Image (cartoon, rainbow, N blue to C red; front, side, top):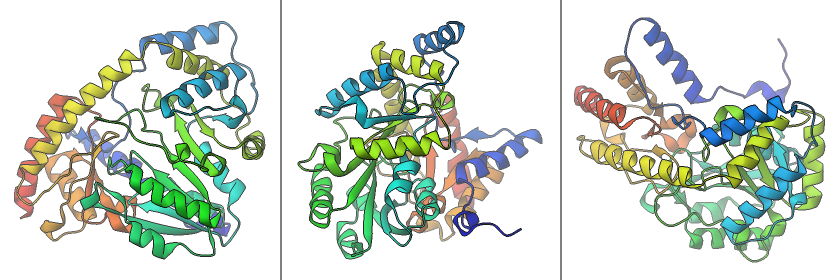
Length: 388
């Protein structure tokens, strides 16, 4: 069939591809430990679930404003601003079914065919996909392991051109767990201001930080007017299946993005938005407890991986991923991931799934029980020993 050029390069996300293979092995009776899918293993917090259920019973099952309910935008504007040391107007918010609309629609609204978009590599696969669908030219900037997987700023400077339109950031990062330091954000901000560029900052993991915080480029002088923040409820509140996210952006752009939503997804489920209000206004200690559990799992997994000969793993500062270097084994990351799934029974992702600069690495998600992580380390230790 003859498909439009904009979809010809689209490919599946690696996590779903590996999940399908792992499930086929399980159907054959194999026991598999899942460290491939990036979603919380915690159930949605009870108060949030109860609010959503009650909202359905109360009739919150009809269309809402395309940009989101006024109540949710007011609540999130106060919360997002307070956490970032900023002030936001609810009119700057566009609520969507998940956070991906806050990535895709601003890109469609800003990027013309032939415009270049700088993005992190290794990075979330949707970044490259949405740039290409918009007709833009993806320009990957390598992340530097020795700098906790922050931007290679020298490469960033070289890759800026007259055709650059948008810079995409992700901190804390998927897949590396790295947090960009303020000095790197200041460097990028200076370039964006000088060249009159837009910045799209994916901050979906902003609450999952282990010590300190993840600064936002939007808070730097003269950056709010040219920055889109993408955030949501999936990771912080264990609400992946609820599909609730939002973008923060200049009002004029928010109006354009809302129109794109009008003519595509329409609006976000009202009962989901009611649950979102409860998530923000409810007990935040649950979030802190979850983060503390993640931190303990992270520490066990990093220590265990660094104890395997030939594997080295930096301590991630945020998100719930580790990104160990396995280049010493002399095989591709795809080959290693395939071997560990088939022979060790541990499902994880090859770094190449996140871009060419991810080669030589693996991504493991520690949103799994400590018991399973410890068992996975035993299996990985034996599996890697057979690879040497």
